[in-house]
Length: 95
Length: 468
Image (cartoon, rainbow over all chains, first blue to last red; front, side, top):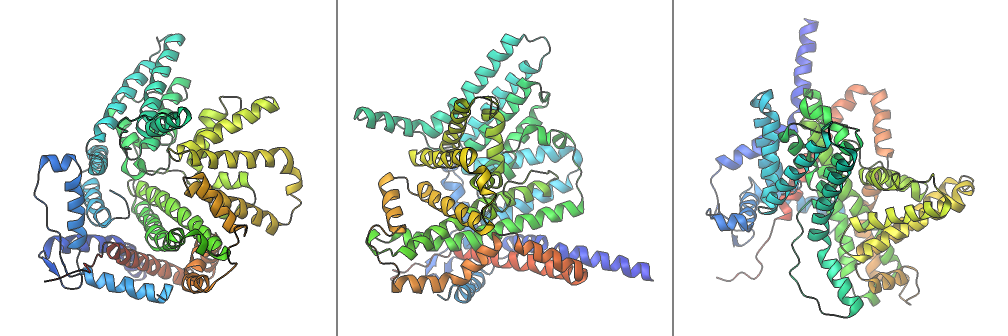
């Protein structure tokens, strides 16, 4: 029984260690699963969409930049994260 | 792609990790190499060809160097070809504009030519390639027969764009075969998170203060503000650079590699020479091994030693950027180290610890002024403010407001830049091992959480002039 407990404990510890990785994977999956938004009320602007593939744009690097802004604009719970950052800034920097 | 971007952390990294660990041992190097090429091509879709070309040329040269029947003269010839090619690429892509404008200003000509854009990471991968070629020439290592493994060594994305400069000899055996364990993976993951937090939580935020100070007109900066600003810059550059190194070391470990440390709490040093043994260690040891010692190092006459020292520091400065202020910055440290070597070495040991520490910090912080301003007149005018020569106020209201706002961040940064926090954690581990384990896990989750928030918020970009 004790051995089993130890084993369970080890498994729990490993899972806890994995939290950051699980978090990254979860966000990645959510990113793929959640539907893309077109407009952000908070930011009062249209959000970036998945860019159309053009060979020339890949070569001059603008395609890659657009994919990155698509990725950050459509990031799951984007407004939540921004609020967290604003709160942290207020506490830490008293802004 | 930079490590501290959402796309890297939440897309590139999970995909690479999953492919790397799921497709079996034989594919690991291929996957890491492909991922690295993709990583580099993402930011440099054209220059990736330059890097591949450079790898193939150096691979071929080293195969010739590695043959037993190559005569000594031929070996020397091949080495020179490789040096000319690698340093030539670096000179053309990094320093062409600087050389041109220097020549133009000396002769007061107007020289105009298209200067090439700087390929990301060229300074790092050129130095790695050179260390490989020179070590093969010296017979210290055997040439790598497998092109993919050599290419993996050069392109490996953890250290490709911002170091550390990994010597081939250090990871030769790991390239072909490396052990990967659960424990290693997660310690690497944690190291990566530390670096990420250093970059997005500390460096970026303390850097805001410096950019505010820098944007102020020179007459409005009070003396205290100037010091607060440049200290903020000193902290920013440390967390930025050491954060990148931590991320690189952590990522390397996640894929089974062991890289050497690149920073060891440089700001706790007690002398300039010690500072440089703790700051960007891989660059310092590169110059020592491939420039300073081949020239005779310190085992030559006094004048030759001084020449060697200044040559190394000239190059160290120049390596940091294609601008003369970096050279000046390098020579500044060269001079200080020479003074320490010749005059202070014995008497310094008798100074109180606090005095040595203040001496170190003072000179390093002054050094950052040379590093940050590309223009010599800006450097001098900022130094004048710092030392109260310009007639600026000692302290003003704005300074008090800013210092008050940034006080807690300063404290966090100073603690994070010193080994005390680690010592405290280890002390705690000894008394309460179980609580320590839980606390560490929570700590990394918190780092992950806030780093994500700050990364997302950095792309938050409200459109202010919005009209229907």
